[in-house]
Length: 422
Image (cartoon, rainbow, N blue to C red):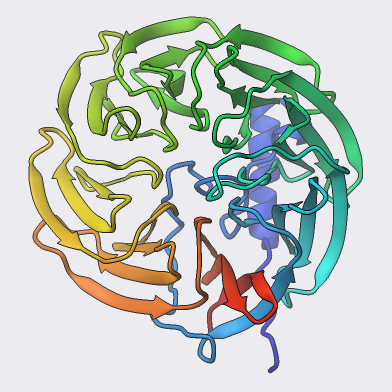
């Protein structure tokens, strides 16, 4: 099969990025992602919303698959797409080594493999992995956090795979696993490690790994990634889990407001409509909640639905989610009123992605459901089966879909990185 060339940033998009850098006065370290990249967890806008683009609605192992590449080892982290490359974190469960992989975006051919840790990977839950976080790319460097040898360790690599620095964030008592992804913000990378021994959230300088600020967290296991939203005229770093919802100043780490709320263990990354933060969790209680981000911490509404692992989507005044048990739901974002609920089947760990007015989400059994983001009723678009297992969320950019799936066969479980498109 002849592979069409991968999309790459145009001269226009590069010029826009350079102008933005000049206006920010921050130098090349504060590069903005190109429109056709998926540079970190949950995409360019950190909320699962892809740029407007045309994608193929149907595919299979023999249809609309542009390439399929072998992934050595195992991981639940999602693909990161930046420029001409696709990056993934992986773990060799036999040796406990943890690595970052780079693939050619156009062909899927391996570019390089960099072992970050030779041994020491940590996990307890068999559904987890030693590489459940997603690589973040600032255009020049790659960032990944691994649970390793009793610690949470943040590593920075060059785009060519050279290790630039490591930072031992804190001791880490493994409970189920570690799934938080690094958040690039300004000239820092913000990382978190919540655990029973007492966690930490910190901002590290991207160039050196030096600590800009550090804040202690409660003594609870938790798996949610940090996120910064602009709310009520200022940037707020929102953290959920450990029985609280907290807002910090991302520049200093200072607490802006904090309230009891989210359950002890959360996996999802909060989303917002600009007024409310939407949180969800699943242990020891199930909840979806809308919390005012104006400093009052008022709860506008809450329900007992179990959206423990897949993150939520906000679109057009409505909140969309997929329950772990395979049920898609639409709520009114302001009131929490349920607009519709539809069983998809299977179970879900991957988070949904919104492309235009279509939601795309893949079950743990490898079935990707496409349906419309409309509050009127559930409107199915397509169902596509590829692989036997999927825990990683898709990356959607440049008119292509990048999926990390696993196949079960005579040789056992084998992971593949798949590129879907025309």
